Image 1 (cartoon, rainbow, N blue to C red):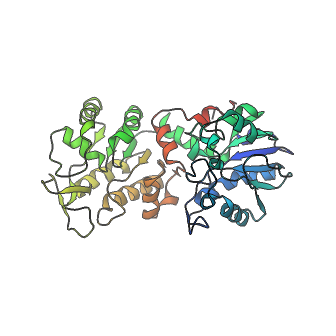
Image 2: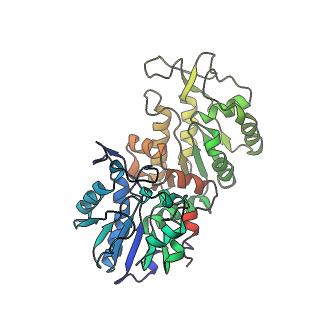
Image 3: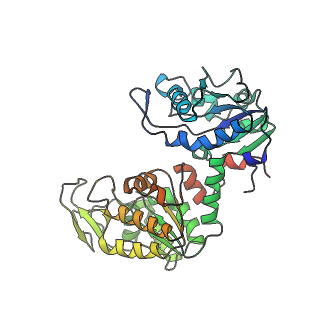
Length: 388
């Protein structure tokens, strides 16, 4: 990677500010953590800094407190959970600025950065306050790398050195491998509700992949643009011309569903059928068996796989069949030596539901950031780091 890594730096006796992504789901009025996956993802970087003799200051946002303190979005429960994982005390700060820095070998977690409106505004004075007493800045928050905020971009002009953490390194390594110089055949699987959310991703991936499989509700905008009946399936009327253009310029790379699981209502028990043509009064909620067969065959032959977005309403059986079949095909291809990268968000949930998280090469910790990367855009939080 062209950016400086934490491994390139001497951290002994230094105060190291690590921007982490502790934006975890909380329940019970902000008192209980329902998933500590993001906390655990940051542990290798924190432990590395401690092993090197650094004093560690951790900073993160949590939720959308709109620039003022909110007890339900405090990072205090995370300090407790992190101390259990690290098996050492994690001190919780009352604020994120004006705090006493920790001694070497100890860990201080700052309070929610977004309790200050200046964080999201990338305010220079606030950035300077965050940087006070800091020797080294490490960005390990890939999930926030697409935001140009004070803690991801602004702080960097006030610190001597800025490098990527181990998680950031890993994310960029995998995403670069599957987009910059992929092993062929290279297959992308793109799902989700809207073409508009993934236009740039589709356009960019058409340049580097051999096949691009379309699923989810966005497929019906493509099908309608070809004059095919879509019943009352979800469609973006204002994107029909764009869908038509993408199909015209993609050669035979774009694969669309050839059959569908349909139902008259958005309900699991409303009765469903699989059809080649979607009748009036029915809506498509998943890809059908012929499509599953074609997609699985394409994925099985792949050496590089990028997956972002489900094939249907996978949270509501029986409309999970397409997504689960794709998940298992990705896992089997990976078992045979393919590199597979799964985007965050719904794709991550799908992989977890299918029970194959440990059978794919990499599951991204950042939904929005991975989408921007796959779109070919430069992430501000990465661009700001020091070059090697």
